[in-house]
Image (cartoon, rainbow, N blue to C red; front, side):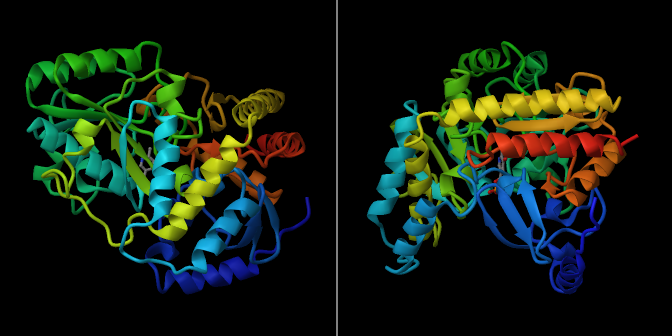
Length: 432
Ligand SMILES: *Cc1c(COP(=O)(O)O)cnc(C)c1O
């Protein structure tokens, strides 16, 4: 293994540390859980990143989900440059907004209207407000280990003791706000049923990641999604599918299509913006038309529906629609990666549990099944950190945290999947 020069990244990180909290604009980028200096990226194309020292990396992060076509896709670049030449923001409606809306809604037949915002955080925050407005109820249920962005009411952990309301998981979140959120263990229907018994007629919505990706990948247990739908329906509570990560990735209609979920509201982000800042939420007309200016639930945004962002989203979903083999190719390469990683870990006598759904995958350094947050936390963080640095030193950019999903894009061809596996095999040998 050649020694890797990272002098430029080190210098740029030092400069950023004096200017930006932790040197980063989103915490996990700072390498906090793996240690070391984050690579500063100069450019990207396809499934590769180049850092500022000129090192080429195979990218398994994909900007945390959006880059399903790979980086700098020519059609997306062309669409954004063409929009750019016409001006960057008007604060007035454009045709591009309806074009992207059509592309979203045709993939989600349960939704008739969509509102665009600027991030996944805004999407879930606004969907919750709508759910509260539509039901006239204040409480919501979320699941432990699911992440829905950084709105106050969603930065909440389970309180001590069963059936209590949530407590803030961040300083600065008022207890009164956290107290409106109830927290249940993921994949635990009985816990949700108990919450409904304890708080009858008070729960506006249950929000979840239909495939969890933010405690690492954790698929829904058999019957969990169906059971949630039955429970919420019988209590006149809305079911909100947070598809910010899974939307358009697990199927054209995301996890909603893949698992046949009849969600009341759906939230999107990441892929829908094709690498520009976009979030969205949608649902049936009678619900969505309760949003301003038609209805009495207020929600707005100066840059919402921004033409550059809409152009990137339209081009991305358009290219995806033009690839008839997109999902089966992602599935096949995802399965090959999973099998190769398992064999490599076994070869190095490293115990791992690999959870994968389609093109999202997490390697947990544990020998127990990972089905919820406690089992995810049981994984060996230090071992992950050693594996991560083994990968990075050999030119693979894996997510710098044991609780994140790695993503394949359409630009990761069989050859790169092979390199990922070989590199991982070498890195596994350094874990023990
Ligand atoms: C990334 C993510 C969010 C937050 O989206 P941002 O654009 O980072 O605000 C919300 N929900 C899920 C499931 C996510 O993966």
